Amino acid sequence: MNYLELSIKNLHEENKKLYTQVKLGYDFDLVIFIARGAYIIGEDIAALQGVPCLEIFASRQGNKLKDLVSPLLKLIPSDVKKSLREKEMNSDIHEKSSERNVEFDEYVWEQYKDCRKILLVDDSVDTGHTIKNCKEAIEGFFTDAYVKVAVLNRFEKSRKVIEVDFFLYEDTALSGPWSNDSREHKDYINRYNLWHRKHSSNFVSVVMTTYNGEQFLRQQINSIVCQLRERDELIISDDGSTDGTIDIIGEYTDRYPNVRLVKGPGLGVVKNFENGLLYCNNRYIFLSDQDDVWSKHKIEVVLHYFRKFDCTAIVHDAYVIDGEGNKIMDSWFAHRDSGSGLIKNLIKNRHLGCCMAFDKKLLDYALPMPDIEMHDWWLGLLSEKHGRSIFIKNKLLQYRRHGDNTSSLDHYPLGRMIKNRLGLVWNLIKR
Figure 1 (spheres, rainbow, N blue to C red):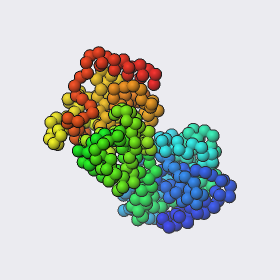
Figure 2 (spheres, rainbow, N blue to C red):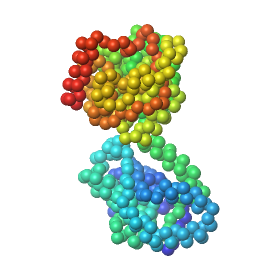
Figure 3 (tube, rainbow, N blue to C red):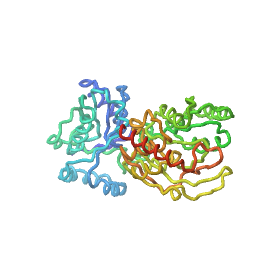
Figure 4 (cartoon, helix red, strand yellow):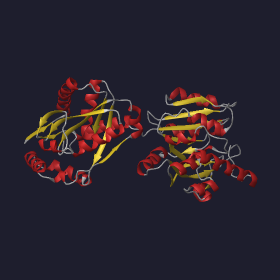
């Protein structure tokens, strides 16, 4: 068995060779690479063809152990590593488990559903099971597309499982910057992480509504914009302010390209939030009032829980402060007996909007909003019905209560409370 070690520079050169071979027989319109090991291969070939590039993941049992052991390879002489690699490829260790856990970012992939000729790339096809499982997943998503496979190296034994369409080498053990023992591994991972951040759906739209909110507005916006990344956005829907609110917002739209002011409908807080939601471009939507203060890592923490749990909404705890910023309540959750559950939240709303973030797919059910008392109650109940709401104990907000709040802590008269809930039930049935 041959052994080939590639630097990042060498890898770019090999990718050009592979692209030249592919181009002669396949005019593809989308590239999908398998995890970070094939990142530069996928990016190079996509750039040469001038087409988009996506990522797919495939894992098998034992990968976690491999990740722990891999750094130790730096201590092993290269000739010993070659021998170990040859023994690995001549064994049946990879054939013992043919199934792979395949994952991809469906939200991002949906944007390229019209692609018809897809090129799946990887560095090497060993047993063929990973390529086979990934190809089947791609064909299941892009139901009308044709998928071909290109790799730098093909091991002959993989042909028992799948035939690849394009390859440069055969029965060659490849080592490259994707390997943990490579001197260029850190640089490679930094490049991959940068690509991943730019192409992930893990971005947020913050929707803030304003109406004559100049008193606390700067403090609130400052606490948000410091957390926004380049592709995140803050959308502010103003409902006809007559004080200095618009001028203050203008200070931020002039400085930050991802802060946007839109004109509200002038029909109150629910319709104003609905208006802001119409402008959201990103997957995760955070709701914001005009007078609170976000914690420094609110977005980061909430996104962590979205990754951890399969859910449609996250609701976090908050401190409650007064108009002067003094703490008047240590936990909003404790005051409200907060928690998930459709019936529980129908009886009393626990989805406080300023403490809430949700997946944009919830808007498929929520919009247009019916004649309801509060937008957060509606969104929360829809999350309970069509998905899952997670309540986390992290206190990520200073929730300000003062004389000018648009929402009240007092109960409505019993008749109005019953009417509100009957209206919600009726509209939930229809959605």
